[in-house]
Image (cartoon, rainbow, N blue to C red; front, side):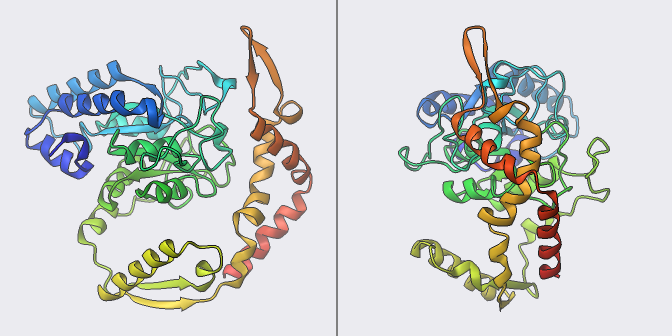
Length: 375
């Protein structure tokens, strides 16, 4: 099988058995990026030399008999919102153009410790303010299945890289759907872990009370492998959960849902959903039932208050404004003959959201209401 078409789990097994080297796997993915990314534009920066140096180090360590983890030698793409020592971190914005952070995000450190090969940094909506990756200051990413369509966002570069076989794994961040939505749009797997389950240290904030790093992959097992490697308690993050990472890899391998209780929310099958999406959803529910899960229809009419255009947006706004509206509408300035500042869409959003941010009592009321309704 072509190396770029193999799953992370398959690559892990082939690497461990020495059927293939980390250098060969890395070069294959770099060649794939060179072949297709001029059209997909999933990457903002490709760290080819560093990636190959990492791969050679893994090969040397494996050859010396060192016991390495399951992701050692497996390539991964990193959303450009994570700080990376010595590599550019732009968050899709001209404001950070050519910024090279002096430290790695905790999750980037953990990926390196796991032996994962960092291919480069992926495109995103500017400071994660968007859902299509069209708001990047460095040009839009495209959906590999149809280049005329978007790959979703704000982690659209990461989802496009995985779907285009440029990387078997990628990491993104999810504040209000920015992993789950691009994963769905590109036909891959993406999860938002429990808040506090994955470290935010080194993640350039959008809304700190909601930002959550998570994995993107082509299979559930691959997503679980990445989840276990990147997650866990971090004393550098005050909201980090001091508890062991759940055994998600074992759960993915067993795939046993017998006896599990699953609530299907009636309101999630309402108006506006495409027939094809509803059909696939119904098939998934039927499959779970056939495997022994107990499915129950549940009505949650109050969920309408939590949808992205309501509570989620209101709760996001104060943090967004505090971090980005240092000058009116985010400000613009010239640097080395070029304009450097927020793009048009983030500027317009900051103008609107500045009003909401002045009413913290409303935000607290919304939070109290949602907690009470969910209980």
